[in-house]
View (cartoon, rainbow, N blue to C red):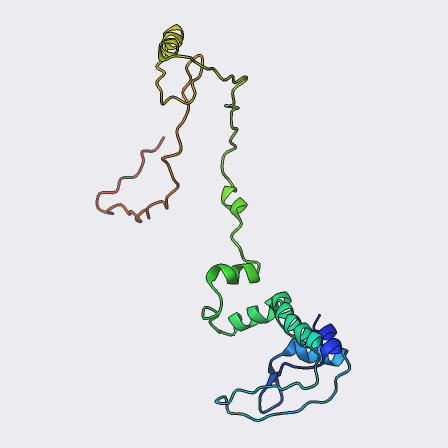
Length: 200
């Protein structure tokens, strides 16, 4: 899309190069400019304390809006060079000022694979705990509800939302949560009191 923007409205955003003409920012624009046939480069030397403004004259109202939309849309579609980021990490560059740990993992395809934690775990089969049939009962009076409860020999109150017949033990999990396991200390037996197992 960058090359399309350059063809439609021309160049408007500057790039950054160093004293050796190495592109520091704007590699995508540089490549797209070549594709769009733009060959002229105007270099402005600054020391970082001056904001460089690119003035474009003669644009129509439609072209000005197109330029603004192109500028924002191409930024949204930009992608990171994962290989370069990995090379930066390998060279000792700390990426935390720009990326969180999770963002780095996503960019470098190093997300934790939950399936790896199940390797070697015993097989587990979940029994079907769903009801064979469910019905909705309506009671005209509280007395009717109490009579029905006595027939089933179960406790039913105005707060009861459902029951099982015959009564069934249903696990409650709403008040439970997974927590980090406490760190288990490395326990080593006292060599003076250690006993070897008897020989068979």
